Length: 602
Image 1: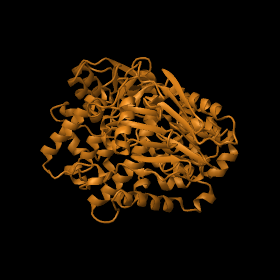
Image 2: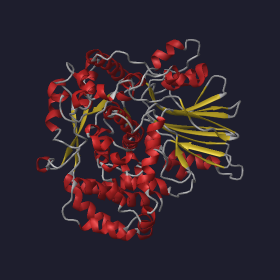
Image 3: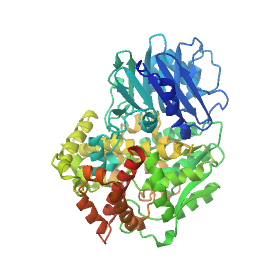
Image 4: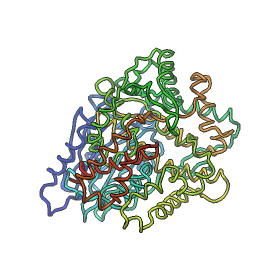
């Protein structure tokens, strides 16, 4: 709902701290067009830009407690703040905002409040007496938080480009760029694209004091298909009956949707006609008026052939129309033409400081543009596929052999071949495989053992990296237009339950999202509940246009291109006549790498 930024322990050698903070704040105005505020003190400067959704008059930030000791800047929504207030009866509430509920919870329970929060959040709480800050981020990382430490000074913001506006050096992180070229869907999560900046990991918290920032620590662990210990904040799942599990899943999702609709403004929904967004739409209509629906439409859709696509199976329009008709929803089309898509790329590059990675980002941007001015918040189906075993490639034995095999599913070797020779010599595939193996191990999973165990390991990577990137993109492109994307599938109570579901349960009878499909029965039409997954549509006719634009940018950015790319190999791709889905995706990412350079490093 907002943008946050701050400077802690400002460098005494620089007299422009307040001016830098103002620049950071202005860089986040798109995230909060409804208001702004600052807190200024010798040791901490905090800024906020507000998108007003709850307690439109009273939720102004930065928010201080009655004593004036604590000061909070918060981005996100605490959906269960009404329930939490009932447990915080002794606090002298002055507003009806979830911001004040979060502040009261932090003062009452300290870090112990984090597992109690059902919502999406990134916040910084400054204790002016101890001269210490607590930073934290929600379980899946729906809301972003990036930070940097330079000598004693610590800076943070919702987006990296705010820190760049505040004077952070504009130097790219070479390892992050290499990961983007080789495995774009996994990039920009482990580290920032900018040297010296880091993302607070999802489900982590960090304290910052005069002696610097301590190492971030997890308050939430997502360990797939395991009974969780008492410190892991999960409900164990001893019931293996599929019908009972589906009933519980449906109940938790219904609760999450109801909570996600809480706002003092109307909330819409992004509707694709697939299982996830359709289920959200039907559940939303159970508890109130039908929300306004926003759906993507391409130019001349009848001429698009999806037969060669591995991720977009069919046209969504008939399924969208069925849902809208049955529920009586008002439908707004987000129309996309090929010319508009190409022209929008520089704007998307400027918006996404992790580098545009997926063609689906066209769609996210178009949906957000269509929503702006009509609704300030929408429900989205993000996180359903990643936490409910929704990807068909998990059923392919060869894709689960190792992290390297998984990213090769998306052309990692061919992508590696476009790197500069010096970077290829550093064995990026082997290095990424090792790094991703370690991520799986940290989640309690291994690529050795049974197929179920390897699917757990793959899912650990998908949740940490793929989903981390997907959620970032969704937040970036909606907030760029002052729209908040609410993610019911990221509810903390829902996650505690689904984390205990094993791959065998989640993919029963070799059907992706089998348990979620079972939970949807009786709520949505069977034809949608059983529909094969189809990603947010892309336009396969764009390949030749990518080639043209890429050649133009190679000529405009020769130094950057030669530093990272084997330019001769890239030019060869630009001359290829038969453009497969894999090649088109590769052209798209290379094109966006150069556009990102122009937007953020020029």
